[in-house]
Image (cartoon, rainbow, N blue to C red; front, side, top):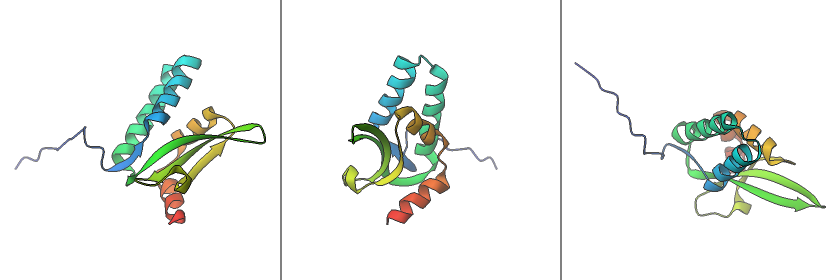
Length: 120
């Protein structure tokens, strides 16, 4: 008996979704500012890995920039489909978008699950 592996690279319904704003922001930072393809590739591989395997297929990771007391803060939220970003789960907040992307690259499934479940 032969068993063939079933692969469907177009189906991203198994994991959390990554917003186009986050991918475009990473592209602008790593390509336009730092001219570093390696860093963008690392970010993109992590994003695709999360989309394929992390679960929480009804959530999307979205970046947000806010200003408090004249200081710029960049953050990442996990937002449930159909809800606003204000109702989302704060994953990280840093003073620099580069630091937010570094945190994104190092986040693991257990940390993400703990933060999302603590919000429920």
